[in-house]
Structures are given as C-alpha cells and as structure tokens.
Image (cartoon, rainbow, N blue to C red; front, top):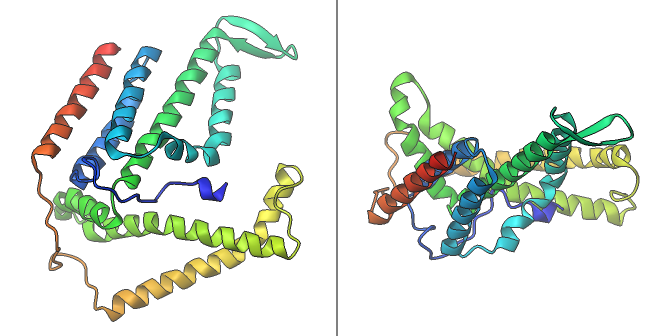
Length: 264
C-alpha cells in the first residue's frame, strides 16, 4: 500500500507537459481544482475525463500508474460515497435494515462526489509527476513574489512546501523499510480488525520520527555548509520565461473552463 502512494514523486521525461513553465502548471492545477466544484452534471465529467486523458497522453504517464495513486485513498473515497448515498434526503428508492434509506438524489450526489475526488487527486498528482522539485520551487516563489510587499516570505514558503513534497517518497521508503524490519522480528501489520491494525502501527512512529528529524538535521547542516542563503540575492541557472507553448496551454485551459461553465 505504501508503494502505491505517488504524491510528491516526479517522472522525468521529454514531453510538452514537462516543458511547460511551472507557473502555468501551478495556476492550471488550482484552476482545475476550482472548476471541478462547478461541475453539475455527468456529461460535464466527460469533458473533465477527456481533459485529463489529453494531459496523460501528452505527458506519457500511464493511466495505470495514475490510478495506482488512488489505492491508499480508496477508503476515504468509499466512505464519502456511502455517506452521500445514505445521508442525502430525497425520493426514497429502497431501504436497508429498515432504517438506512437510499434516495435517488443520494445516488446522484454520491456519484458526483466520488468522481470529483478521483479527478481532484488525479489533477493534483499530475502537477508533481510532471514538475521537478526545483522547478516547482521557482514557480511557487515567482507567484508569491508580488506578496512580498505585505511581508509574505515568498522564498521561505516555496522552499518549505517543495522540501515537504520532495521528502514524501523518502519517508514512505523509510516507513516500508521499518515495517519489513519489524515484520522480520515477528510484528504483524496485516491481521486483526481496524483497531488492531492501528495499534500495530504505533511502534512505527518512534523510529520514523527519529529518522525524519535526523534527515532534517542533515539537510540543514548540508545547506549551511554550502553557505545557502535564499532571498533576493539568490541567482538561478535557468530563468523562468513564458514561451509560446505556455500561452497555448493558457488558451486550452480557458477553453476548458468555458466549456464546463456553458455545460452547466
């Protein structure tokens, strides 16, 4: 299950999506997430699915790999769907155990919420899968630069968010190693009910936190040893500059947003 988490991972490739300016991809991702909440019918979700499919084709990321990232969140998605099925009032269709009422509106709402969560996770995953941590840092910092006038530490915020994303795969790999080491010594993480499995995970927290703090200390020492100083006087090897393909991507994004709004 841990290996199925794809958030924070980057797949290098020479594709049009990978070569887009990171600012375009960040703005596009937030716009995509926002426009998802404006989708009000199932035909509109077909446009969203087609949009995701086009990006997947251009970025050469397999659908199987993208769907693999949904496995760790399948419990949350299922719980959301069930809550909407049973808690949404409307025209009753049938009852379960004489007290759980399934309504027509509940089924529609559950379908909307399930698809919305799946597309939201897929859209957010595509950002990190097609953008390197360095490019993501530069993009976030550039977008936050105008807010420096009101005291927002743009570089520090960008660096913290990027380091957090960068170390997600590292911490997951460390968790997997700790689990295998404890299973070799007789620990059981797979049998028992939900509470028993949750209690079995507690011994993982202490070594995982120690490892995380050790890595954070090593990173801080490495940055200090290299005299790292972020901010206004920091130079970049590659300067961000919008090109023709970036404006085309903005145009396609605006066309997609207009199509979703009109379909409502």
